Image (tube, rainbow, N blue to C red; front, side, top):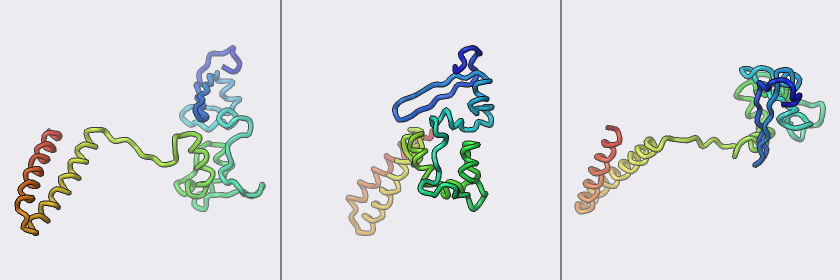
Length: 167
């Protein structure tokens, strides 16, 4: 709580590197700090980024000259005010500044995603089956029938395993 008199209704967490800071604000302090309602949650620059406000999205530009998105007209000032970008083209327009911002907020700038282990296993088995099938056809074309028989049996076992995953 900032005022330490009213009940905190807004709970805010700031992560900077490996340090985490939690803010508990009452409605009045949240309004004062620029944090309004959670459904339309603008970035409270004074809380998130310290005293200096939101980070510059267009580093290296002379002061007074501001970049705007050619697609939607969104500017850095708009980002500072809302904490959001206007359209997908904004990510390209403000790429240099966003990269630094994302690095401080997340572990990196590339989304790797997650995949359930069962789906990953079935995908890996399907890729392996495709490779075995290709090698089997090659062995038959080369009249290497011993290798072809071994590959056929391996492919048969692999397909049984794949069927057991989907059942």
